[in-house]
Image (tube, rainbow, N blue to C red):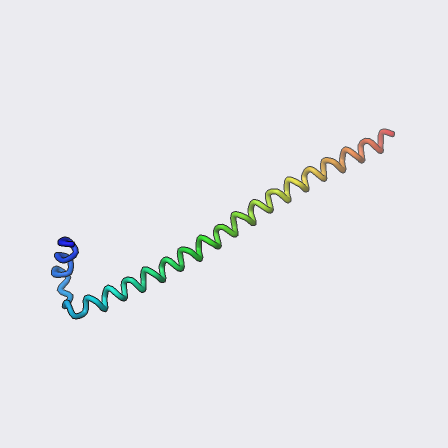
Length: 77
């Protein structure tokens, strides 16, 4: 508290404008938090998409290997 008061007095900001300044800072903080939350949700979606793609590629590789085995078996009969 004392440190904050010292910073305010050093800034030269009139006390009448202090409340307005604090409100502006709080609004900016809220806006930044919303942007952070939106960014997190985008990244979460990217992680899910990447995981889904990885699983699909693994399944594709397994099916391809299974098809090769079937072709080899039918050729040797």
